[in-house]
Image (cartoon, rainbow, N blue to C red; front, side, top):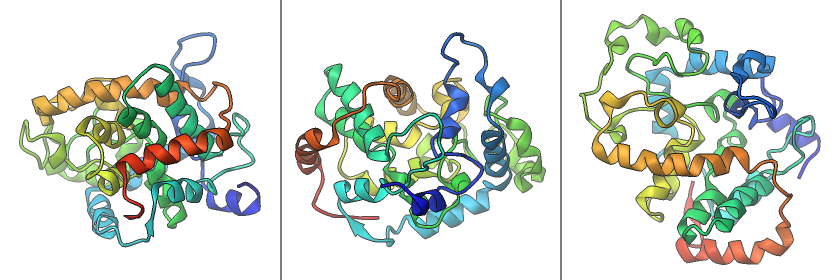
Length: 282
């Protein structure tokens, strides 16, 4: 679905809610640092994200959303709901959210991965329904990072953290901050967004490897740059290998052939029913 209502939903500094990923996609003809020419809207998005994602904010959002009291709906219903989140002004793609999800899943299926992996690709962005629950873009998408400890230099646009209130709290600006060394990422609060939210919605239904893909696919400072090792345990390091396997399907499937949603729907509805109940709490 597209039109005036979808543009209103997607309002914010990004032309489209997927534009934040452009800082990780190299230009088509070279491997230069894409941040040099990033669009102004992406830069403004990260300014808001880095200034406002405080430890207190993350704790408040966890308290608000983790009871999963927003609504009851099935996975396919959530995909159709998310499909209203489209911006007609995006110059780079005309794909709906469902088409992007199917594109990702189809690329994974074509490479012969297990069915749970294909399903993970299909649903990985469903946490973006937070936008439809009224959350601003900076609280839904973007690279994730731990709060309550020192910001890594490898987080994109790190300079914007200087305006975050937590930057002035000494306890939060040591390497481990409020956490114990080696505590494991499950005990660490990452900036709030669609990854963490969806992880909690589906955590009872997928293998740990798929859950790690969902929870950490935007945690580029860890899975791409190797940062925040002090906070991790061996299980985290093992799971991040699965995230690294997944991530190219998310980023680089977008230019592939447009999926035939009508033809693929029966296959994916059957796949969803294999793993998930008819309705879940969101």
